[in-house]
Image 1: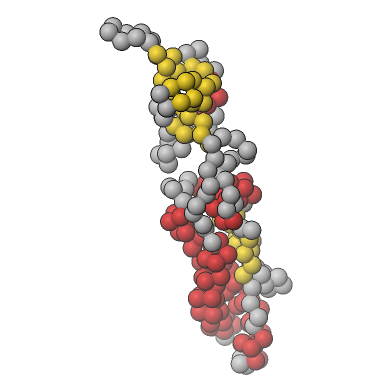
Image 2 (image 1 turned 30 degrees about the vertical axis):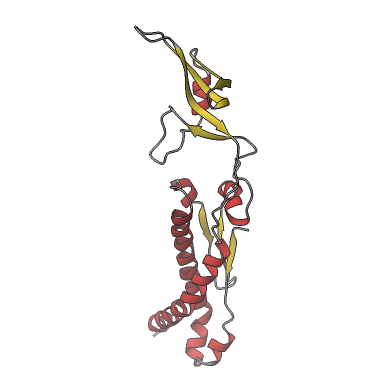
Length: 206
């Protein structure tokens, strides 16, 4: 789902070239395909920034390229498996549940610069003597999460503070349109990159 092939039918282009240019065409084609694939990769990252809510570097850097060669003139622009698993609902629809677990909503817990909980924070909090994981009846109803027992202070009774709430997954409304974004970039840029690569290859050959 998150894989886009960048390739080209260059037979018409080859007919319009002289012998010298035709010899350079396989190399130039691979160069043009890779340049186009890089533009697709950057466009996918930009699209993620627009569609998703402050995506982390891990998510943005998950867009990768398998480059084309002279013998295999096809590049693949794909999303690495871990990120692809949690991004899938934003492509085809469905609930944005991570690994079949509830979503974690920070309430009074520290988050990183991207607004996400640090890795293994829930496990670390649960190991502390003044915290526990469970459901507590509140004015909002029954809330499941990580709770902290607060100490009694002068004029104030001890109680419970919600650190992290476990929320049910919800339908992902945003759509990345991964293939659509990629195809538009290929259509707009490949021929430009091919002309540039052929000209460069000819200049080098001479």
